[in-house]
Image (cartoon, rainbow, N blue to C red; front, side, top):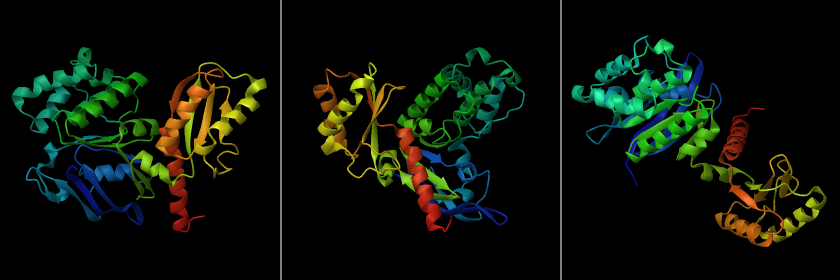
Length: 342
């Protein structure tokens, strides 16, 4: 198991009588991608600003593994500027050219002077900003400014990268590119924190999710393990052709009979009254099953083998985004109930 590179101990931040972050405890290991998920005002941005030393905690502390291989109090370590890269939500820059700006940040963070130009060229090529290298930032689109913000966060090759809403303003293709580069950073042993409202982006790229509500972490684990709090699991099957409405009831009964031993036998009626539903607008089946990986494999085998003459499955997925939404809603409800909220 990889070493712990950052640790939160009873981390607390208050603004007057308002507690924005409430005694957070967390351990993060080298090479992990951690997602911070929560609604506006949950404490995500306050937490990562304390990680970036923009804010100081009122109590508790953040420990970081330094070059001396010891965990030390972040507030007492002066060398962390070279170890952490930070992208704030909706960055704003002086009206310099992209090259001037990136060179300024590289110098500020003590990147080797003889390697700066090579590093700038490498990153602006990766983020497809080569043609804009010598253009003023005021001519950039919102998405281009976001890419520039990403580059300045990693220009000095930090060990820990903190990204606050990194997908803001990006088109779908650029989002895929950002996810790909985040994975590349991870392969280099970097540790990455991502705060985002985009649950799909979080679930696709993060190894673990920290669910935050009213300044407290109410869950911290993989999406799959967090999903164990749910009363059921679901599979979405997209079909090649639509099902015949006149044969639908009979087909669903046959499906329920064949898949019965793998279906959720205690399905919450608030989620669904039947274990298998058909959505004609998506040409898809939603199957509520017992959540076991073995069951998922058997269900796929049966759909392909026993129903070959009825339909063709072209997609068979367990939707992480809807899982994450339901996990968060369930845990928030439980947390509020424990705290006496109505």
